[in-house]
Image 1 (spheres, rainbow, N blue to C red):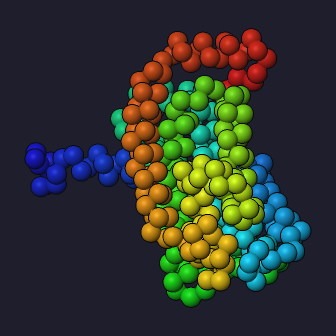
Image 2: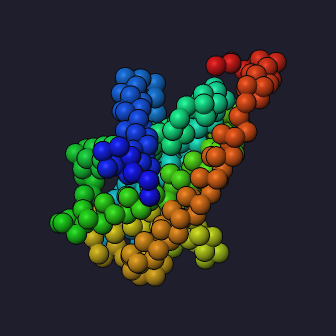
Length: 297
């Protein structure tokens, strides 16, 4: 391997520069998010909706003494992570692609890697911050559940980490192929809402038909919700799970498989999207948007 002056490996310096540039860009985007009431209100509204639904539910989980509200809160915690990766991130990517961000970054040395580092930082901090806000506000205002002991917090940590690794690359891959911001939300929200209903996030998954359970078990949201329930609910709540247990090894396996698949899809699709960008394509998109009456960035 070639050595750079001073004995430092040459290829490592650009990598460090990409990471540094990405982290700096991500910090700027985080500050912009915190100073933007419109963007912040969307995340806060999700937390408020979860608390209102939990406050409305009064029964226990069938076959257990666990309040149904606790199951709903654990499910919404998983859904908030899922939403940031699979809904918010693709919308950000496709919007910035339409605005010409990928075209500008392609002409910048290390621009695409730094951009991806920044987006990952933004998504992870947003997701974890929203999750903690939900859990703490639920504990304060709705007698919501919190992890019990070091084992509960450790489970919450690794399920959250694997869950984000499973959905963030997949969200980046989806954002690379979506046609435009005007169609992105419609294309993403319908399947996302379907998974919210069928993955056991708002009511016990065992109340659904077995074929629906089997379809839901293919996707990461079901396992994210199950893993978070294991960290937040008492062991007696396992009786409401399809297998009668938390199946944490299966949670780890499925989420890891989705993480690998997401990375395998995201890298080539993002590179392809960047290669396809050109000034003529950007102008054509803006002209089409102007003819349709949509605002042009």
